[in-house]
Amino acid sequence: MSQPDPARVKAYLLDLQARIVAALEQADGNAFLRDAWERPEGGGGISRLIEQGAVLERGGCNFSHVTGAQLPPSAAAHRPGIGGRAWQAMGVSLVLHPNNPYVPTVHMNVRFFSTSTADGTPVWWFGGGMDLTPYYGNEDDARHFHRTCRAALAPFGAELHPRFKQWCDEYFYLKHRKEARGVGGIFFDDFNELPFDDSFAMMRSVGDAFLAAYLPILQARKDTPYGERERDFQAYRRGRYVEFNLVFDRGTLFGLQSGGRTEAILMSMPPVVKWRYDWHPEDGTPEAALYSDFLPHRDWLAE
Image 1 (cartoon, rainbow, N blue to C red):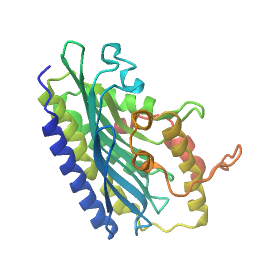
Image 2: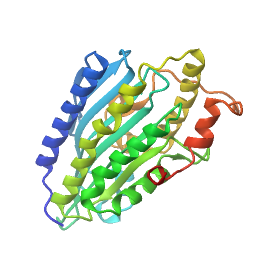
Image 3: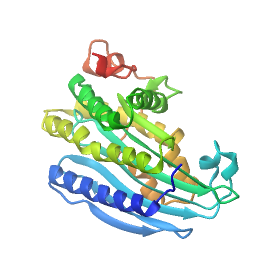
């Protein structure tokens, strides 16, 4: 593996955050607040957040660069040789919860992690991906999102997209519900099988593809008429988002275990959520179609 260059990664991530926030501010018509923070154990970050916007009910795009003297258990679980070593992690993570139930929630994350073994050998990897969580499914939106993900990975090997698509399907799955969180996208972690420069280029390609993957969907659906029924179902389905992030999400667990900033870690939580006991949508309704036609894993690009 080629030598890692954390300074280059950090510069890219800061620029990516700035570009995404600028595009989202233009789409919403309102500014994101900026909240820079420092972490007592080492490092810090910049949180960018909007609440009660014209288009986005809540949205956050966070940059963080944190360091530590001892690797937390969640990061060392699959690599016993690095447990307890000094480390640094950096990334951009965003979650957008739009007002309109016909606009999907979206998540994107790109990150870099580096540490070393006891003899000083560098150990590094990239992770990230993006996934789409509709409330009222739209096949054109799902295909566009998956096409954009495939195009981002294509220069780095034709095998990456089907592999990362399956990884996303398996990762963003609520095992206790036997139900996918949404229509998927791509997900990868612990990626260092290409040399550093190529692995970094792949991560950049994923980050750079986000706006092309999501903004056309946002623009096409944000003015769709809706009522209380749709908002109620949106709030109910957002409960699944909360369940996944608090029970399964590795980034949430890592952030909390490493002493990260709680406000930034839980930025992904939707602002209005509902739960009901053993509720099921009525057959033949648009709400039922989400469960029958969109949540089951599909090869959206083969159709």
